[in-house]
Image 1: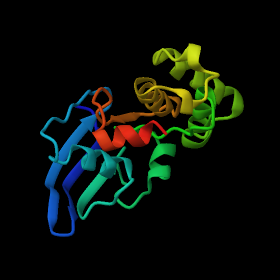
Image 2: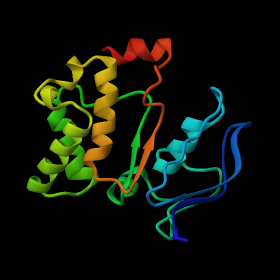
Image 3: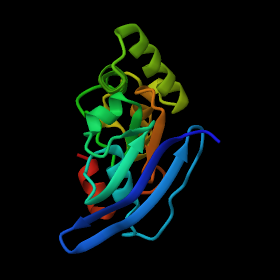
Image 4: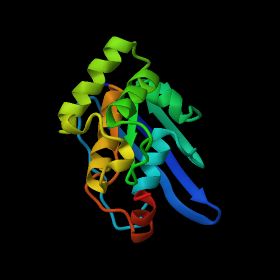
Length: 180
């Protein structure tokens, strides 16, 4: 059996007195597809935020490729192959779709210009956004912004891709804010 790409041991997260996750042990191997299901408020997005490094755990550890990365920030994780696509897309609205992908490829994956361009075009093709490459991200409808969010993650050439409700719709308040 292959070594885990990612594993958690006793992972937990509390917000004040509210315990969102507690004692989670999880193992993900390279090439494996794993889905996390549960009702609203069950901690799915919190788990992905913990794994992606945007919030720290209250308890437990996270190992990636045999290394304890519990204290590593999101930018370090992105540079080392962990990409997160969040439920609410947050592209650089004043940049084109292609420019958004180039930023991801250059800074998340630390690719040179030529390799970054190849990674960006690959992500455009995979998400069927090639015809929108020169459009401003701010002009995209919600569904295309979600596709752009996935494309940004792919452009970083991840070894581990974390997708948070890519097909779900944001809450009413989020829909209002994402149209600006």
